Length: 270
Image (tube, rainbow, N blue to C red; front, side, top):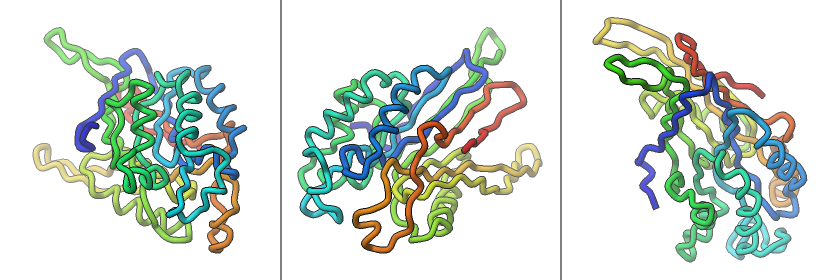
């Protein structure tokens, strides 16, 4: 398994822009999973131009006896959940940029040293883009003449992807936690987090002073808190948690990374 501090790099020299769709908290084979929307999404995705996905944990429900939720809330045993997820992902595996673990998969990793998402990525022959704790992505879009016969990406972006944890009952608490962490990584363009099921996109700014060029600029980071593919109910309802954001496969959270000169930008649509 690759170390989480090993950079994942993707380049798209022929694209003027690429689209990234964060996917997390599917909870496949939970009784609350909206599998119909997921199946529709998996059929729709390959038909889109220059569109890719990030898998960010809790892709299977994987309830165990030590879980907050009950194993009886799953319609399939965990080993078969892995197989079902692999079958969904096989036709679209060329569109996956990275994958991480979620707390639902981490239960097995903690109890039995078995990481279900790593198993899935190995089955897909994508273990090189799996990062258990979090993934640093360097993404180049477009092509530019760098001189001396060399070419390179017109625009380069740094994303960090991690499943996340906690944050509080209200959406604002989750946003605060995620934005605070976004300040930790120098040069970060986008932070993508799951776990809370509270869909939100914010763009916190910071002031950057470059002493080499004596310039002061403002820089924004796109922070995405992903929705879930689960309906509201179960222990979340019993614990009086707020209903979570439920994804609409026709209107997913969308990031568009520009590859056009002088237009370096991440456009967030939702």
